[in-house]
Length: 233
Ligand SMILES: C[S@@+](CC[C@H](N)C(=O)[O-])C[C@H]1O[C@@H](n2cnc3c(N)ncnc32)[C@H](O)[C@@H]1O
Image (tube, rainbow, N blue to C red):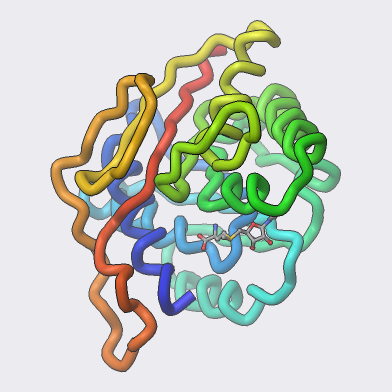
């Protein structure tokens, strides 16, 4: 966490600086595979950059409880803000209670799908993507932000987060879900397909390096691929 938190949070901030905040009085966020919740800080920083004052209602889900001490630090450090931050170790697909205004403005998949690409079987990957698509349809999800390792991968072996995200997008089409999609990457991006990737102009980290954190070697800049899907209906 001391190694990657700054990078992950910074990457999310870059993406959320481009988010369309029009007509929005709060942002309901669900993060699947939230871990320590680095995206919370990325979103808050983007709101500050954009001078937008709206509360975040954040529900982070991760099946592992190893993150709990860090999640508690995160929640405690934000209690004096207007943001409502909750973490769960339950299965999102079975246990999501929903928000009181019945909309999920943003589903975040922050370094989740590369994890699935690495550890799940081919059948498991397909099933996982199906579950996410059903969750999106059933819970009125308006936007999906994928932020993950830059590795492009291969569509037959589904060996990258990017390929799982592309599979998800193809499933939207086959289920009649209308959407727009934007592909983004950072200046040092090694390789990508012909989806029309847009390069950020900068890749510098956006949070100050903590004194005494000696774990950030070789993690000095943003380096992810991002796919932003806006669901139209
Ligand atoms: C690389 S970490 C993600 C880190 C986190 N998003 C962050 O910002 O630091 C991947 C996480 O995905 C979680 N994960 C994998 N499959 C999951 C699933 N089906 N449901 C919930 N969490 C899952 C893992 O437990 C792990 O904590």
